[in-house]
Length: 101
Image (cartoon, rainbow, N blue to C red):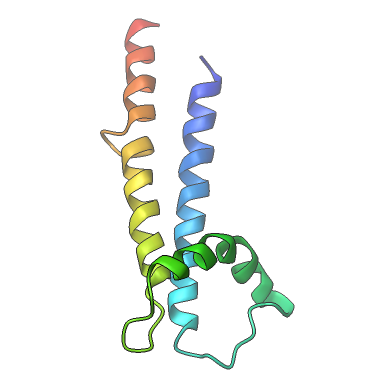
């Protein structure tokens, strides 16, 4: 079961990184002139746009403001807590494995 702590760490870092990218997207909505398809901004736009595009079809802008990055921050934070948080599934499995082993 040595792969479990590595999976726990990797998943936690992945979800935290994704949350950070969506937080950057939220800040960048204040600057509509920034093109997320060019230069270093692609590092923010490319991983987030595949989730945001279909979500925008379901959730229309509110007062002209795109709220879909906020929705994804909430969803990813929830998923992170359910999987690798203090009471998360992977955390509990890891603790149980340590007690047994």
